[in-house]
Image 1 (cartoon, rainbow, N blue to C red):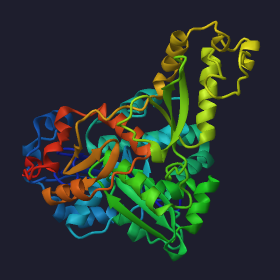
Image 2 (cartoon, rainbow, N blue to C red):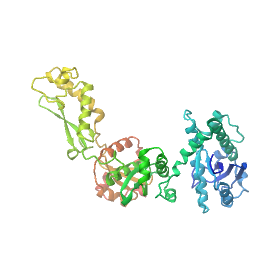
Image 3 (cartoon, helix red, strand yellow):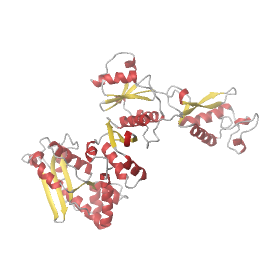
Length: 472
């Protein structure tokens, strides 16, 4: 299958946090030319084991009281895993826990990792679920001790064997290559750099020669997302091109996903990376506004960004990247709602003559007096409702709390992010209020999901020197 022995690994722990919780049991089932060999140890976590964990695993404080702590077993365990293909179910958990534990004792753990959840998804895409209990039922795996390390490691070995029996070595090798593809790093990128990238929310930047920005992206899991670019490079032309050109990678951590989205949008508009097109600043931003003519008909008028005050103006519709996009949208609305394209400014009208749409039964006759201004206006405003630009719902700037950070926004504009009171004051006084369509759409969506505790009204801080207890 590979040139490496296979290590089927499972851990039991006191919880799910790498830094706070500790390992209580570890098992390694090794498959090599010499056969199948097992290694299992109870570990003294030197901390409490929650009652629900005891109930799940059957591992009690009394069972681990006289066992060695991890640091005394670390070297033996490291030798058991060294040079083997690390295979685990939901491997991010087991690999992450072991990597953190080894790091605390000064050992650098960098195995090649295969996740059997991903393996199952690849080989059995028709299955809706891929947790271990589902695999037991679907593949008739024999359970010895569920939720004990060696018992679950044996289940992984059985699943692996079932995959080989059903698909053969070539298909399973293909699935392995699909997962290990992320190890094919570009020649100028050091694997140690990748290891330093946190698997937390943030923004990453790819640079080419001469420090030219190639691509900027965001993710809730930075390292995983960066690696996925190089895994995708095996089969996608865009990713392959990116992989060949990237010479340097930088990243900025954020407190959460919203901060990453806001920062990504700002950096793309500032640095103009070659391979980001969609989120670049739109120079031709425009929208429709409505004015009433002497006969009482509402007439759409296209205005550009220099005349727009989004968030402040009523009867502002759309936000389009170009005049062409705005005209296309209005034409579509006219046809669906039987509006007069002449009165909408989409067609030149001769005095007293019907528009072309009326002649082909796509206009209800406002142009020839068969439809009143009131009815035509109602149809128009109803059709435009979904495109209406929302008014800013607050009296002034607000802060959106995310972790230890506060994102400051005003009139749908992102002013910046503060991590302390001084930065907050600086952001409020010096932040540039520049409207863009992407930030508007992002904030509009995010504000509907926020709890009241996550929103801070900052109007008083712009006129009074009041402290903010958020950073207390």
